[in-house]
Length: 150
Image (tube, rainbow, N blue to C red):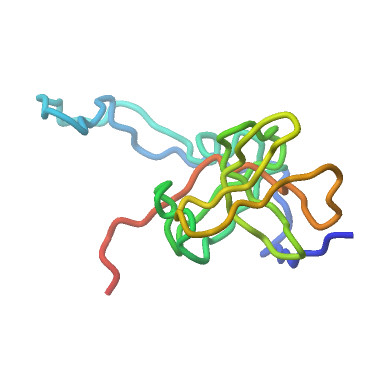
């Protein structure tokens, strides 16, 4: 039996209150700059955009730097959907030996493994019915703060 501590910070949400925020109609260029209009002409509800399945969605903070090369840093907020079926390349939260672990699922069929992105941490081979291992959920978003820490 796998045990990992998960503390809910309130009752699960059955229905989310709509909260519409301004959404610019233009996209932002990450390459060669292009002219853009200076107006907002839409709205977005982050509950809908970030949580397609609210009843199976959880949030966790990242502790450590093993996934930094994937753009996931210490302190980032993860949006984890437990209803998503993991596939090769998915970033997953697993429970291994009673601890939550953030890794990328790689391999296929009979050779699945959990890999860190740091190049130092050894992969964990998934073999048969390992009672000490559980894929807990799939990370669908990572919220990364860009302001310098003060």
